[in-house]
Image 1 (cartoon, rainbow, N blue to C red):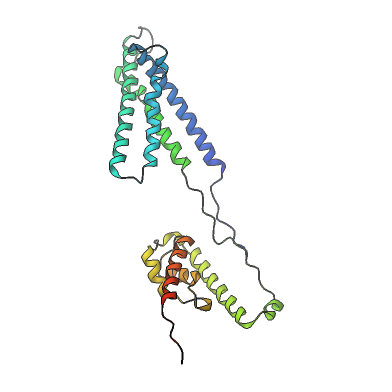
Image 2: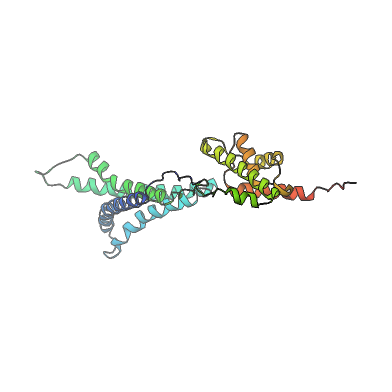
Length: 261
């Protein structure tokens, strides 16, 4: 029988989210870029180099956030070091934007819309903060894991009466046994598989030792999965079960064979 795969998120939705976040980051970068370039010009930096000054600050923020996500499994000290650099760059960008807005606000001609310095400073800080947040959000959406292929979506043709009669009794009983185990395993996976705790590597091996052997006295992966589900756990992937199966099979092969007199 064929089991329909579960409904997944439309593939175009992450693309639209990434496009929107990229436009948001571009707009925030443009707003912050203008203020930082004018601050560079006021600092008597060469006119040509003033266009590179915003790239040093805001570009470092974007690269630093990406580095933090890459180092999420690293030691605490490297992550704290990168986080400190990103914090310094973000604070510098905010400070430059706020100072630029306040100085221009103090020179505003009377008659126009006048805002106090605090309001102007808060508004000007939105651009660098939005830039940092947009870059972080984009990278998180980009790293979203692809949905796993459902193990249940496979077709099992039903054997006809004539085909079953033509098969040997040993083969027929073995297929019936494997089919029963597969049906039990599939039912166990369908009943709240994600709600069960993940079995550790030691638990996989320990439970696998208690599982019945398969055909020809070999360790059966399906028997192991059935026993794991019966313990209220989930295997967590075929690769993990296969690894435990190989270890158990090696133990079984090393056991001395008792000769029958």
